[in-house]
Image (cartoon, rainbow, N blue to C red; front, side, top):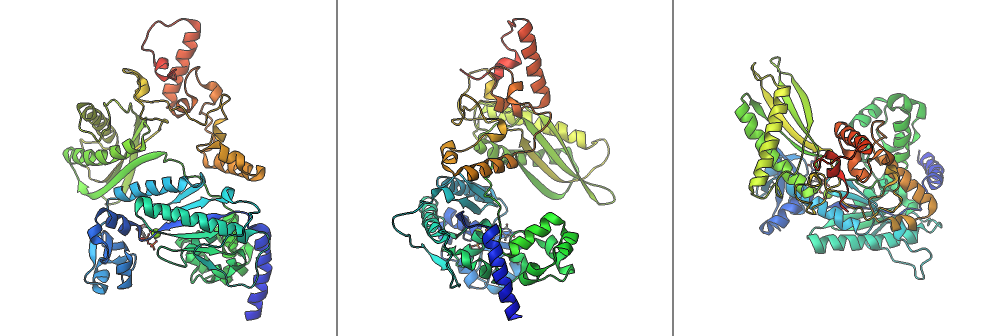
Length: 527
Ligand code: TTP
Ligand code: MG
C-alpha cells in the first residue's frame, strides 16, 4: 500500500503541476477568535480572561485563554461551563459590531490589492500576484512559518514569488493589528484552497507559506474529507454512501461513480480539490444587492405586536442602509405564517419606495427622519396586509425587512427639491469618455488591471463578468438610456419608472415640455 501511495503521489503531483500552475500568489487572512476579539476590543477589561461568545445555547467561539482551558467552538454552554467554570459569556446574537469590523478589515486589505474576496465575516482571500516583482535583484526570505516537507524545490520561480507574498501578508497583518487592534492568521500559497488550509497550521496570530512541492502532503495531513473547503455535509454524506471516507479514497475514486452520485461538475471539482488543485479566481466581493434583517419569535397574533416588531427591525435595517450609503428603491417584507396544522409558510411582498425623503441620516433624531420612518412603516403594514388577511385569525413567527434596488448613491447634498436626492448620481472616477459596456465596468483602479499580463487581465475581466447577474432581457443597455441620465442609475430603476422616463423622453422629442417638475429632469446628471 505504501508503495502504491507513493506512485500515486508522483502521478498526481505531475498532474497538479500541469493543471494548477504556480503562477499566482494568494493570501488568506482569517481573524483569530473573531467575535471574541471584537468583544475584547469593545471591552478591554475582558482581555486575558477566558471569554465565550454565546448564541442561543451554544458557545459559537471563545478566546484562546478559554481554548487553553478546554472550551471549544460550538460547545453547548453547559459543557463549556463544566470545562471552564470561570468562563465569561458575552452575548453574540447581535452581529452589528462584527459586521462593522468586517467592513473595516476588508477596506484595509483592499489597500493592498483590488482582488479581495470576502468569505463570511472574518476571512478574506487576497490575490497579490500583480504585486510580485519579477526577477528581483535579491532573493526574499519567507516571513513566518514555511510548510515544506519535501526535498524537491519547484524551479518555476514560485518559491521566490511566495516569499514576496509572505512579506505582503505580514504587512497586511501588521496593518490590521496597528489600525484595528485585531490579530489574524495568514496562509500563503499558489491557490485559494491551499492558502486557506496552510493558514490553519499555525494559530493564533501567525502565518504560514506553503511551498508548491508540499501541496499533496498538506492535503494528506487533513484528518477528514470535511476539512476540505467545498466538501460540505451533503456531499460528504453522498461520498460515504459510496464508501469514500478518506482523502486517498477520493483521489482514487472512479470518475463515473462520482459523477453518478454528484453530477459531473461537482465530481470533477472535488476530486481536483483532493489533489490540492483549485483554479478558482479570487472573486472581488461586491457590495450586497440587498440589505435586511429577520427576526424569529414565539407566535404573535395582533397588528399592534407586528407594528412593534417591525419598528425595531426597521431601525436596525435603516442603520445598515445609512452606513452603506446607497439609496434603495425596493422594500420587501417577509412573513412566516404558522398554519393551524402547525407547519410554517414564508411569504414575501415587495414594493417600490422613494427612499431619502428625510433630512439626513435616519439614525439621527430629526423630524425628517421620523417622517421617513413613518412612511416606511405605513408601506410595511400595507405589505403585511397583502400577506395576512387580518379579518381571520392568524399567527406569525417571523418578520423580515429587506431593502434592494440600490442606486450608486453618495452623500453629496443634492439640489433642494430635486428627486436626485433620492437617487443621487455618483460620478465614477473610472468613467472614461467612452463608457465601457456595463458587463466590463470595473469597481477599482483600472490602472491595476492594465498592469496585469494580457491573459490574466482577460481572465479577470471574464471573471468579473461572471460575477454580474446574467443579462436581464428587460434590462436596458447604455444606448437605451435617456439622454443626460446616468446609465448606472437608469439600469437599476424599476421597469415602470424606466418606461415612464422613456415615454417622457419620446414626448420631449415631439414637443417642448415647459413643466418644470417632470420625472425625467430628476434623473438628469447634475452638470
Ligand atoms: P471561525 O473563523 O471559524 O472561528 P474564530 O475566528 O472564532 O476562531 P479561529 O481563531 O479558530 O479562526 O469563525 C468566525 C466567527 O464566526 C466566529 O468568531 C464566530 C462565528 N461562528 C458562528 O457564528 N457559527 C459557527 O458555527 C462558527 C464556527 C463560527
Ligand atoms: Mg477566524
